[in-house]
Length: 280
Image (cartoon, rainbow, N blue to C red):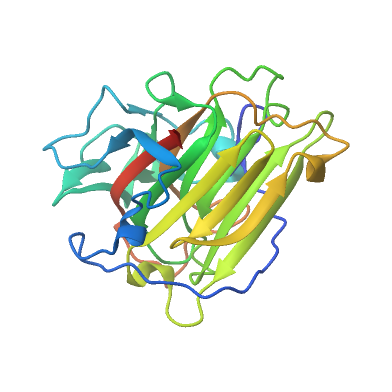
């Protein structure tokens, strides 16, 4: 997702890099260590997590964005974001964000958008989540990061890191993108496409490793893209400040298009956990 005039929009520059992949089991308890995101090298230590094992969303870690933003969050999205349990709740050890087709506050759809801003903010490290994404035309789940302090100014000057985006019309592909620009918006990103099936079929591990001069994107533990400080030139590198995490499911928008006769609701994004690691 991209911030335009303080709200989000999406412009993709996709580079397909072919790698093998390891599917995560749909059963939360049946995971290898790499799939579970544990650090085998000893390079990182866990500094924050939400395993979603409590009976309700932990509001000491998460806040809700409410409403429609400006012009559908800058993307002409159709949903109204709420803080209701109908749109975000804990079920069977998962955070469940549910997009619904319903009349609410003059909109035709509802969903949830959760963020850790001023409750969980980090500079550098590994950030990961194990997620089963929804499906369908016009559905747009995302796991991403925005700057807490925007020390270089408003979007896109202070950057944005999209760890995972999927659009319903392209259900086998995950997109990872960086957004930046001293004078105007630029983006660099990659994508990974499954060789069979779609992302909705199972849980997958989406992650980045972020250092002072590089960000790497991973799908189920396999790197598929990276950007470096030098690769952004002549634009400056804005990824040297603290960022926070966002989880949301949008409905419609300029990039994914809009629901049609094939779209079904409700659509749910299941998040097994979110974890943040930093170097020892």
